[in-house]
Image (tube, rainbow, N blue to C red; front, side):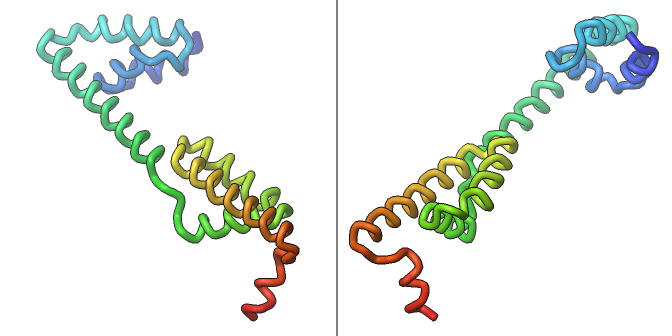
Length: 144
């Protein structure tokens, strides 16, 4: 393991060291070194319990933030844009797919579901308009 990683781990605060020692994201050697460093600090049991409680509270707060982000609905203006993406087939390549990918990366599940719903509604409206022999752009011309 590199010396910079060891220095980084040794300079972590007690709570950050506990978090580092319990994570699955780091190399096993680094996690092992973090556990050794934690043992080397010889923290009293009551301090360890307090730090573990703080760590669990931090995890719960992070999980709550993830749930909050995942349940946020799609903003109204974006709903209209996504609806138009479904109505006009060329727009999804410009708007729908990049926005959907962004929301997927953020973990915004509700926004992704809303995008499917509104794009699907626009696509279905396009099919209905074609069956009724109404060009999808003609209603825009009547507005202006």
